Image (cartoon, rainbow, N blue to C red; front, side, top):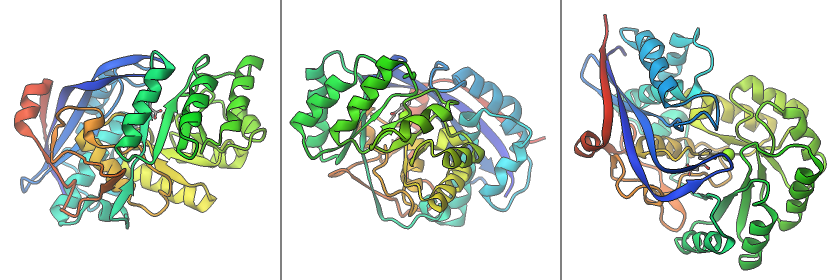
Length: 372
Ligand code: OSB
Ligand code: MG
């Protein structure tokens, strides 16, 4: 396969409900869609789902654009490859910048699977026909508003709810949700903002008494030792998200027992190729995995559904329907969750079409690149 043209599209979608994490609040998202075209005219789309600000990891939308336009696309344009798993080697000199890489890697997978006539999930090694979806709920102004959000999503049939926590918003909301839903699959995600101070550890330890499925990323991304100390002191499984960007990070985390569950994000790992490798490594280590999200638009969302079809994804993934976040998604049909399950597409490639008309109206900036 040989990619002869590519384009980047900075697209803005409004969120139907503002989302607050431990670091910031957002009402709309700007993601960069990547379009690759081969010499026969076949097209593949990918998504760079970087947050606008460097609060989740070091990247932001501008760095992603710069790295994709200046380094990744030039490495791919004109190169010949047989399988998308060979594509990341084309930019092996580029360090880090996993979100930018993920968008181009994803486009190569959708291009290849579409041209080969196989569903993306099958191409990745997926075996499930449907995947179980959980929802991620942001920090709300009040506990009552959080309970209302949980009620809406449980009412829609989602079997698992993840609650964002931060110091000062942890034991109280968890206690309230648990009191109202004693049997619900609930977990919490701190996005790395706790420390090993007495107050923070007391709050985290108190969470151990609420039957949570896991406590995700309590400490700073690079602080695997803090995770290992905490994991040894609580019964609730610790899950890693930000700490694991590479397979070496995962191997070290397993070695240190810094957790026992892995959130695999296509964006954070640098693409589908790396996400599949992380799945395989986690399975070998006996860590169950689930697919995390970055509020992806439909392109990245369908890729997450396809990845979640792999056998090691035994926990509900953050692959909620498009409607949880966007009134109108960039793909047709949008991702639909029914009773907390999303059907894995059986059409070749991504399994949905990018809505060119809607894209034209929501694109803030685009640029085209050609080989040679
Ligand atoms: O840690 O999972 C996270 C969104 C932005 C930054 C970090 C995270 C999230 C989510 C999104 O929880 C979940 C989703 O896409 O459904
Ligand atoms: Mg997380």
